[in-house]
Each structure stands twice: as structure tokens, then as C-alpha cells.
Image (cartoon, rainbow, N blue to C red; front, side, top):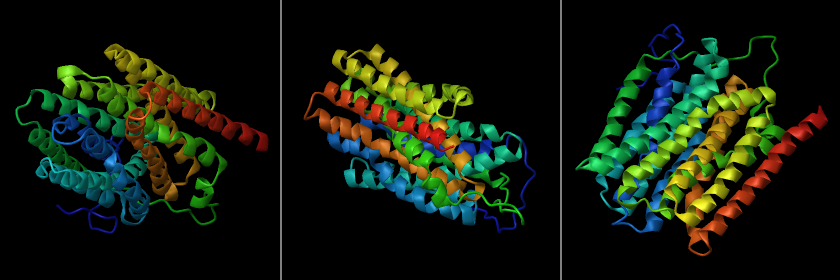
Length: 403
């Protein structure tokens, strides 16, 4: 299957109000492949050490962050379809490498890194494409929410479906991994018929938007985005990867992990309209509420670990998932407001790269929990979130003072 570029002979089709759904489906499938491993981890626990298993979950961030920063710029040059399509193909390749590696740690690690590179190639172009299609269809305000929902939907459905497969299917790994490969094929077919508007260029006589360095070096980006973005996945992965280990789920570990992941990320989707309503009060409000939810969620997680309560585990997943959703959609909306269209993919890639720093949270929490009391570790994480809350408040306070 060939992938079309802006310079190819494939004609751009007329834009329709639902055109954004096709790149959104591509983003969902990539996110599905990245996070379905959360449930499949259960199948490796008898053959790999706990540290190896946890490392494999977060390892794809090693490939994702560099790919985000490099390939987002290429999507501005080669087109969203070419780079997103290539990311989908690489996602399937990474999944197949993991499947064929059996229980070999090095092989699985290589596959997870490839999956990370695929996500780095796909997510920023998909987000910029969804934004542009939404803008051209007259729904620009919904672009960030649509992109965030597609990403979150993939992160939620991947582990939920894989958890069901692991719990009740006789050959869970082949079924789960090959299902993802089939979804990749469907997404590639969908992209072939998707309109890709040409890159926006300033018209003669117009004043260009701010440069990329100006956007990334601005006070709002440094004090609001940089200090809160790591909590996007820091909150989510604590709920769906760290806590199910600290709070054993008994004989339903696989499907239970999938349910916790789906609960976390489902809450992240449901809370996103709230972020838009909070933004109407003040651009700072959804950030502050999101980080406050991180603080509360980590404190509830402390009680959850201390009591071993599954009910509290679900409640923690809802609170931390809400924090994830608020900070993700608010961060995307702010980045898109700050960056002009010609810098949208790169600025979005930097934001995503910062969010994926949070994937280190489960590894750090579990490593520190072997040295200190896990409850004390979670209280310390909550204290770090308080510092982010202070920084976010200062971002808009100083902005008003300078106005």
C-alpha cells in the first residue's frame, strides 16, 4: 500500500464535517497498540522479573519522545497523511516484533521501542490534521477535544479489550496482537480517502504569527505547559500501571487491570467537556483544577495502598483519570492557541513529549516503594504536584501583571 504525499497525483477530496474522524481513528489505533500492553503485562509476570515487566510498559516512551520531536517537523514538509500512515505501519511492525519475541526481554523491549517511535510519528500529525479539518469545517473549537478523545479512546480500549482476551481467550497474545494489526490495516485504508488541506501559508501583506522559539520560550508555555504536562500521563499511568501492582487483584488480574485502565481513561474522556466550561471562566482554571485533581488523587491512592481496597482503587482511577483528561485537553488547546498553523505540529509534539515524561511515574514509584513505604512515596508525589499548582498559578498571575 502506498502512502500519498501532498505532491502526489491523488486529488484532495471536498471537506466534510466528519472528515476529522479518519485521522482520529488512526490516532486511536496507534494509542491502542501502545497501551494494550498494560493488560498483556499479566502474561509475562511468570517469565520476567517485576522490574523488567514495569520497564517494558514505559519503554516505548524511549522511542516516542525523540520521534515526536523529529518527525513532527517532517509532517509539515511531507504532509500529515504520509507521516501518520508511516507511523501506523511501524506500529504494526512493533506489535509483530513483540509477538514473535515470545518471552525474550530484549526482543520485547525492541518491539516496545518501535511502538514508541510509531506513536511519536503519528500523534502530532494526527492532532494537527484533526485540528485543521475541524477548523475548515467550522468546528475549530472542538479540534483539541476531538484529538484528545481519540488518543484517550485508544489508550482506554486497548487494555480493556486485551484484558478480556487475556482473561478468557485460550491464546491471548496472538489474538490481542493480531487484532491490533488488523485495526492498523483498517486505519490505513481510511486515510487514503481523507482530505488533506495544503499547509497554511501567510498571505502577502499579513502579519505572520509568532515563531516557534517565541511560542516555546513564552511564559505561559514554560510555567503552565512545562510544569503540568508530565502530570498528564504521570496521573494516568500511576492509576493504571502502578496501583494494580500495589493493590493485588487476585485471580482477575488481567481483566481487572484492563477495567482500571478503561476507568482511568474513560474518566479522562468524560471530563473533557468540563475543561472547556472551566476555560470560559479563565484559561488558568482547567489547569489548576487538573493539578488539584492530581494532588487529591495521589492522596486517595495513599489510602488505597494502605487499605488494599479495590473500591478505593476504582475511585482513585476516576480522580487521576479526570486529572489526565483536564490537563490533556487544556494543554492541547493552549498550545494550539499559542502556535500558528505552520508550527502547530512541532509545538504539539513538544507538548506530547513533555506529557510522556510522566510514563516514568510507575517505574519511579515502584522503585522507591522498595526502599521506602509506598504510602510515603505517594505523599511525596502529591507534594510535587502542589509545586506544579503553584507554578501554574504564577503563570497567569504574572501575565496579568505584565498586561
